[in-house]
View 1 (cartoon, one colour):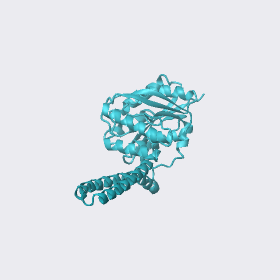
View 2 (view 1 turned 90 degrees about the vertical axis):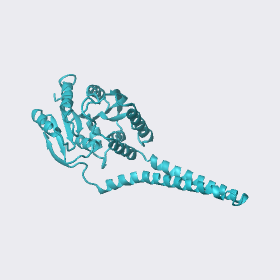
View 3 (view 1 turned 30 degrees about the horizontal axis):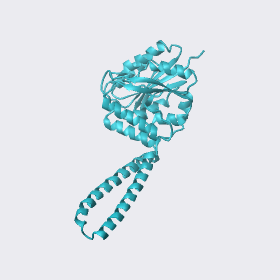
View 4 (view 1 turned 135 degrees about the horizontal axis):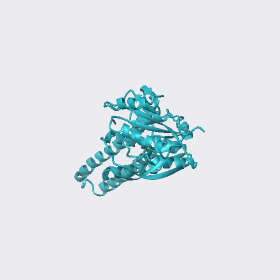
Length: 314
């Protein structure tokens, strides 16, 4: 009987210290508890400048089940991993197993068990983190915010470390998105879903390539792509502030009528303060609107999700 295939996707950028250990961990699973399954491990390289590509080529020569996509430039982990996910051929797929192994590969065994029970989406729920308290707290607040504001139910503390059935992979092909947010897109698909809690490990080797600005960019994309709430909040807040401003103007009119010119001088400071306040509010709302317009602009311009320099073992 033909064995079922599990596809594992790993997006990498300058991970020469981790790619071999990452594959060894995956290989150990399929030599051990998942021996009844076959696998393919797809590495999507984001134009690394260290020895990552050299190591991946050597690994692919020794192991046909290792497949490599070489990007022409760094397209970011979301685009790169989603492009690789679309290249998978397995009966089920893990959209993103980080090369640094902060997400424990051994959890994939539990993913597969739940998948065999009939769940088409089995996601890992980040219950705790071996990271700095500030970063952990910020991420927790962000995930909960996206979950609360999203137009679909995006489970809190869930990333791309999950296992999805082939039907879900095929459903994702129907999305035409210039900047994929896989966890949100998977949630929009629906299907039978369950979660398994786990602890995010500290990075053992190397430094994270996701800088603060990259995290902000990915975070804003996640919020904009799953929710219209920021626009609605801006509109309501603008309406409330306008009503308050008009009310204050009417109050000022009555005060000036009752105390003609007595409070003229003190009002100048208040006028300057109000001017700067409302200017700041307007700029904030324009910025919120700009995020959506920028996303629409990029989507309308079109173009490929990722430009590939080549593929290995496909």
